[in-house]
Amino acid sequence: MRIIAGKYKGKVLVSPKTEKTRPTLDRVKEALFSIIAPYLENSKVLDLFSGTGNLGLESISRGSCFAWLNDIENYSFSNILSNVKLTNSEKYVKITKKDYIRCLSQIIEENVKFDIIFVDPPYNSSFARNTLEYISNNKGKILDENGVIIYETDKYLMKNSKQTEFEVDNLVCFDERTYGRVLLKLYKWR
Image (cartoon, rainbow, N blue to C red):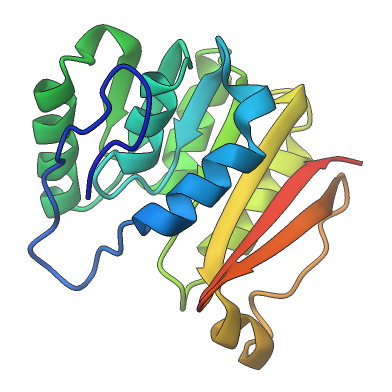
């Protein structure tokens, strides 16, 4: 796993030593960042289920001014700290080790709004739905009015699961892309 483009291009990031974390593959990441390129310059990014910090650090490398990296797992938190140090990006990031709802609550308390939010939770969980509903119910408090949410899941689980196919009141899925097993769904305000 590496940074693909920008000021940290070529930096090899610390990868997890567990199967519980699934970093976004380079080919998927490259396609994803081509899609969200118009949103990146001077953007604020939230990588809510950060794992390694991969997506947030790629965003900083490509022009984002700030990334909030969050993960509750000890092994993920350790990887994030290592990768932030490796890229010397400390002044551009905030790192928290919280449950995702507590992290979102802290964001509201600190009055931070994001242009880009990455939602890449464990595939077999209800975390994505809960996250989108929480953001929707707190309209204007987490996601900027012109912001975008990128939800990553497994396309086969999406087809076979009642939990992952959903509509959210204030958000609309405006783009959907498939790369092998990976499904990316992009949301914005309705």
